[in-house]
Image (tube, rainbow, N blue to C red; front, side, top):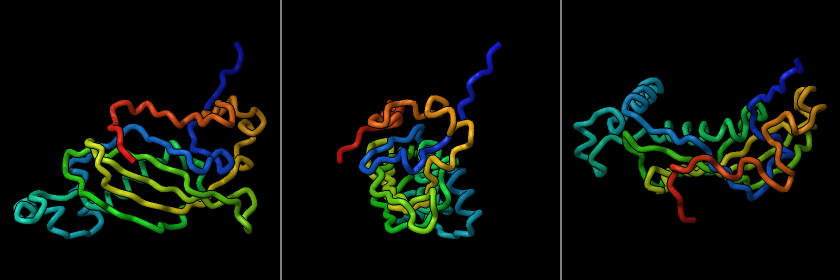
Length: 195
């Protein structure tokens, strides 16, 4: 019996990322009351707009809002398996964060990411800085969150020896370099958004 091929799930290496490419992440994440209450409580955020239904009913949106920090964390989290799982050195920071519309309990957050810029590090061989723009949409296609962040990423020289010697056939990225294997998402249920 021959040895089975093993494919380890990972994000993209620096040299696999192409500026201008849009990645649609799947699946989306439906936000529950429990999610919002737990996150708000565990982060010591006592904002009544997240916790007090009676109070929130008297405010402009008429109901509790999902904590925007939960929205941001989930927006970034939705991108991890496709872009940065095992390939990121670290998050360097955010240059822009905005929440143009609120999320409510029961809304579903869908995410997509555009690679805005990348460059090799001048001081860290085998690594580079990538600027990502993450956008989150609710189930109606309304933009609810946008974040531009900078990350330090490994290039493919960081790949495990088996992956590096076997080539792309043992990795999830098996398409030709001019084709991005993750540009089309199985996220058929996600709403289409106008740009």
